Length: 472
Image 1 (cartoon, helix red, strand yellow):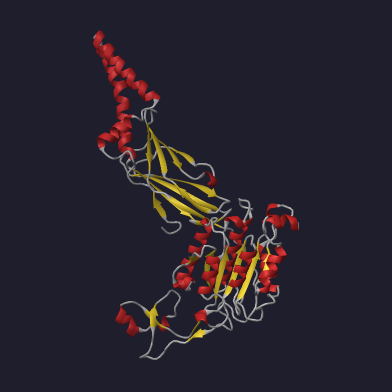
Image 2 (cartoon, rainbow, N blue to C red; image 1 turned 45 degrees about the horizontal axis):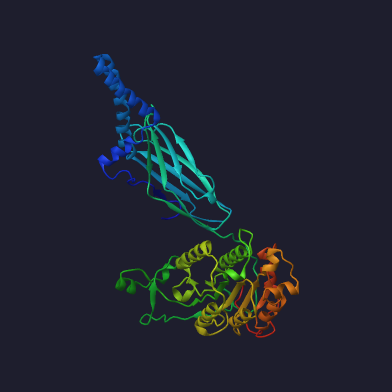
């Protein structure tokens, strides 16, 4: 379902499996007043039979029949009330609000009684919304709305919608639970990053990017499917007629530089939890980096320490156009639900980086592959694995988070060594010697400032003469 599209929250409720079963279920909806009326009617009927009072029998019949008539009327009405939910937008950053609009339509020929509407939402999105709606005329509709907000990223179900109907006399109260629900995706907060150039000459689409030349002759043309934004003057009509779909010529076009964003999710590399924890900062910084690089025209992929890559198709990199937008949404959805991994090392990520040619550009030639990593605590072994990811001729930028700094513990040498970790400066030096542009990511410093520092920082002493991944 597209964002903002109405979602049918109707459908057959769990109590509508059959007429007999539905009526028996509806009888259980008698309120205390309704049960009292029914009991009084039966008692009056018995007394009228014993005493031979016909007038009392009429009163008893009225008292007994009235609740039963209300049950029958509400039983028929509740299955002729349809509901829709509209969620706008369906993907929001943490701390932002989304609007939920509910609409009820009375499709029966009878007016409804008092309606009490309730939508189920997780507690992190706020209090459970409840609404009281007055009588809805036949064919009429009512619309209500509420807002949801979460400071924690994730995927949260909205629904199912619950509807309680009562008759004007308050004798019966029936509940209808709809079956459909929507999902609100809360993605990490992103920060606008400044334009910086790390090293090298090539950028996403700019000067220095390599270009691919296609065969442009009438007989040797290599067509491809039409994509949104293609110039209609490039349509190849002969191929269009042959394949039955719009085809365009492959002309000289710039190839987009590649960039990989590596996120270290190891549980043992971070301490603390909550919106202000080190891990949440790393997730938010990775999301900001992905958005920024996509805006600059890079082909981007998201990689974690487990070796999982998003997107999985197309060699793991976004391909541009509509596919790029869908891949960007997929990466943000992945970051919305990413959690700690139980892995102890970065070996899988190292294999994924080296096997896919990050740092070696398109097709294994050149040097415009950019690698940007967000690491937690690194011991000597993991520092060595991270150093292997940086390949000569490729740009590599690492932001290293230190648990001692983020947790507020003293950062003395004895304290760090007690945890089995080398000092932070030693970890950074090991990465810089391998060619990384490595920076510490202390608590309380905006990521945009660290991004600017990374663009101005000198590259490592070893392997630092090659060109890197272009404009940031």
